[in-house]
Amino acid sequence: MGEHHLLLASQSPRRRELLALLGLPFETITPDVAEETRPDEPPAALAARLSQVKARSRRAASADHAIVVGCDTIVAFEGQPLGKPRDDDEATEMLRLLRGQTHAVYSGITLVETGSGRTATDVAETQVTMRAYTDAELAAYVASGDPLDKAGAYGIQHVGFRPVAGLQGCYLNVMGLPLCHLARRLRAWGIEALRNVPVDCQAHTGRYCPVYEDILSNE
Image (cartoon, rainbow, N blue to C red):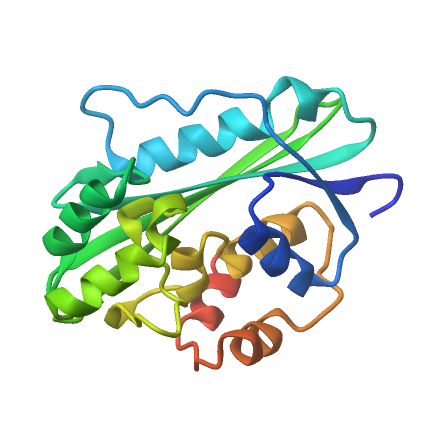
């Protein structure tokens, strides 16, 4: 990496945990940005734009010799983004909407090299099918408080609720940081992960990943 270091523009514990799987040293900042949506903006474009806004935030731009990683995850049902629920009632409404249905999750990843301004953006898409959880299961999950800080009101990795029946695409995308997409963008800039990303990802999630070869080979 030479004189550059990675700077994650996020204070999300999940994203910090996942980024550590690359084996590369990094620091974190809280991006000083407003996550504003635009009328009729497609979810994939929204995820890409917000990742760019975070990577180019004032705090990120002030770092010396850094490669800033900005990321934003959007949950969309029938083309409409679902943000983080404001309260338990909205979380309940979202989970009822998604129950037994298939929706899309998009994560935008942007790299910005401070100083030169060099930029690269990638977007991961995963199709997620929710299971037919009961009203009682839904209520218990909402009461746990877990949905309130998550887009779409759920965490795919929650061991008690287990909301997802199946998916097509990257699992870590749904968690908030698609590592293989990030690794291939870093590699294009001459930065190699110090750990075996597919192996460590599958060990971390306990899930077999059928898509990593396609992602990593697609430049």
